[in-house]
Image: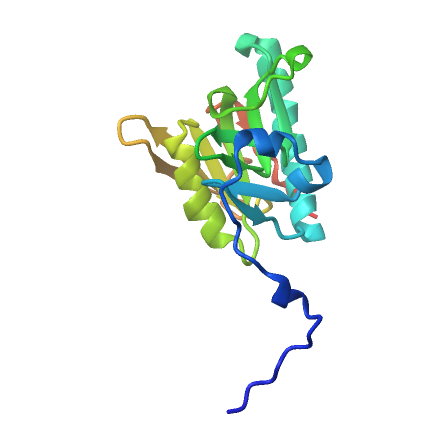
Length: 206
């Protein structure tokens, strides 16, 4: 079967191998409009696909839910905690490993010194799984978060199902704690780790 030649100005003809791994210092020097659309794995740049509106809605509502319970945890004496969505998380400096999780619950940073979010600050990472991101979210990133020592990891749709995992420090692997499902009998599920919260599905659906 004859192959059809691409037009000379086709974008794919400009693809080139990355000449060398990106360092932490080089990443810090990148313009924000570039750093916010990439992740870096072992120094290699990975461009993040543009999220769908449905994905963004799920992330926003899950962030709001966790943030509400985070404020309660802080008032209850858990120390200063914060929640953000899609922000830089430094897992390793050499070779550089930088991810941008959908939702992160972490101990407050010293903003006055420009303290960077690192794995040791994080209590929980959440990835909202979308078509096309299943392998990256449920295998690649989960393994990286575990090896970095992040104690809790969730994934799932964020709207009707949430898979909960807890780190086994001896093996540096996540163990499955269970699945939260919207259609389960009984009231809204209540959890105690990493903080106490009730998953109100009505706040997540759209």
